[in-house]
Amino acid sequence: MHPRYQQAFTTLPTLLQSALQPILSADDFAGFITASQAHQLKQHCGYSDSELAFALLPLAAACAVATLSDFKVGAIARGASGTLWFGANMEFAGATMQQTVHAEQSAVTHAWLRGESMLVSITVNYTPCGHCRQFMNELNSGTLLTIELPGRAAAPLGDYLPDAFGPRDLAITTLLMDAIDHGISPSGDALEQAALNAANRSHTPYSQAYSGVALETAEGGIFAGSYAENAAFNPSLPPLQGALNLLNLAGHSLSTVQRAVLAESPQAKLSQQNATATTLAALGCSNLNVVALVKA
Image (tube, rainbow, N blue to C red; front, side, top):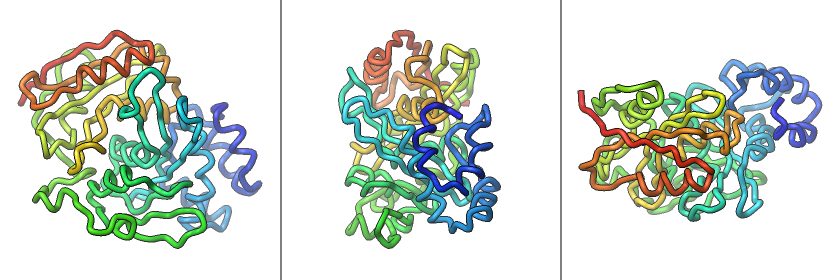
């Protein structure tokens, strides 16, 4: 079991501990509970979907990288597949606060980047801020997404975001978590191909500035993130944060990043290069290569 889970694990009910132990101790545990594992946990403990998600929240919060605030937020996103995706806030000392990843963003992008097609609910240990409510409104589940908080009745996102403004108001038909293919051809070495593939599935209906980032760790692992835009612009999540989120939830330290590739078009309306380089530098990595997108 990864050391970060040990303290939170001891606070869980004994029955849940016994069922979770082999899952958390697996070498390939990467911060999510598969649908079949979730089914087994519910049967073993007699939990409902909501009860299981609430019970797992301390483990998700244990993944937080709260270097600025020391305030750890955890989130569990339940996909239409039945898989439970961990999410946790991430902060980067030495970079601007705008580079922060909120727990809800973390859970959403975790699910999206690993291939989930739709989310049913988000369970969080603190009330979502306005930034996150707007970010979640970009999803294809929209204001129907169920929000679950401790001590409150579950309610749709629409109750937390009345008179919502989102992609549907701008006639956007391809929403976050919908399948998409921008026709970008992968080329180069494995890391460059991962960045180009990430750019190919980026959600960029407002700027058309497709971009993806791929990171290589000291152990040789590759983690790729896609750019996720938002109708309100500011809650957009850069591709670097998507990649760092996967890396962190898979149990790797951010300081292990040795090499990075950003894939974007030189002619795009906006560029991720400066922000990517600055945040990577704060993490101790100066090895950033930028590759141009090539349409198939």
